[in-house]
Image: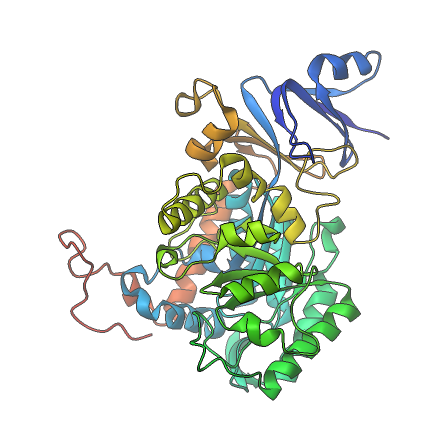
Length: 492
């Protein structure tokens, strides 16, 4: 039986090919799809004599659900942890994620991450499993996506092997205890494929999956650009990894997601089956050369980028990539140690960093920024046919934003004001596949208090198991220093 909901009297921002905006507009939902978009008066006339539910969106902007195309599962239980000793932050978090967590931890984190996304208007996300990739225990992925499905948001775990060397050790829960086990690369690939088979398409299609090695080229520096005299050639491992990922992606009919920094793209292009192309989206791309930017554009590889302080020196060349014809989306990379699931802020900060680096305040206008967290992000993950814009036939993933607020008034230039001044607290209602998950900021699917309590408990238990309670202590001159300082090393 058809169930129709009319979102009426809102400012509709379609993000369609013409970027149409409709004052006093409406969106008609029919079950899980968008059935009509247009002026409220026209749609109400069309519905005369029909039974439908009406949602008054006066004072609200109606947008497609926001899409965060790159984050890290686990981070929501460790936000700010280790921030005052961040030089070794990766070591701290890897010890927790890889050696001190249970499947129950990943369920609690999945629910918290989904809840935060929901309240930020994010209806679809992509998550690398931990900060340096885990795929050794498929139960982790299963529990992570179960947490998201309970809240009701879309999730796409990015599943694949960590960087070399191998074998890699992970702590796996067995009979209530965490046991250290070693895995070869091929064993991790088998586990990754098992996890993809278990979750892809589950929960009525809410859950997808990506084949995802942690970085594009694992034989060179994994978290920053590699100098040209060191990024010389691909190794046998690099070629084997890329071929294995390509074969698994074909078998499982999934796309590919990975990270890359300067030097990697040039090397990857030498492979027989490079992790490049329209079925790939690559995160970071900081410090890449102009040649590498051209490779990304020419191969139609999608790029995702996150603002960070060091982009003033080691930049992802976002404007140049766009001008070359590459599709670029903004992501949060969130949420540890210091970035929330706030795509409005991420887009704003991306523009500010690029403007500062290029000394040009006209870089990345507000409309393009909104595109980069909606339709461009949908394109990056291969979902532009059914997500990312408000168009007839697309899935009804919809976010409304309350614009009748002091910081967004008067409504002179609505898109400018949303992208300059908007924040997650402005999000009012959220639909995923036509299902109302949040109404006037009240979550309808889970108990927020229960999610928060479970997350607190899971976080503290893992920190205790890892012996990382010392990381909760602020820097020695936390209240007085112009520069944060420690008087002694904090070991992982």
